[in-house]
Image (tube, rainbow, N blue to C red):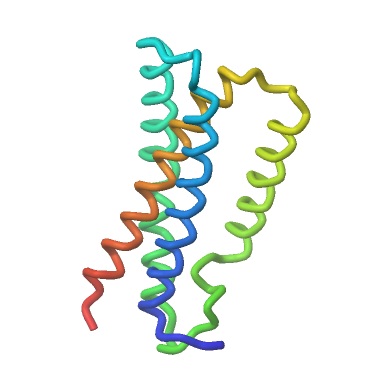
Length: 136
């Protein structure tokens, strides 16, 4: 199914926000019993690191790529490129393994997932802002 390329940003916004919401939910569930100033600061560091060094750049990269498509109508899965789908699959598999294996302590899941989930949510919001600001 092909859609106008502007709507690829809306799909990206939904996917990133939904993933972030789920990751943040898992992190906050694990936070019970681990709430402390140091853990909150560590979650903030995780958030800042992922958002500013990875995800905000990714939003710019994908927005430029989507706007650069020559044809107005694109397949809906073109909100990502192939390397991004591979990275997403790797991150999802790694996260599922990390939690199910018991390899990571609950405090790590709490701190890391809370920061990462918040960064993912903000990334989804930024894709949504780019969708709204799109000049037709």
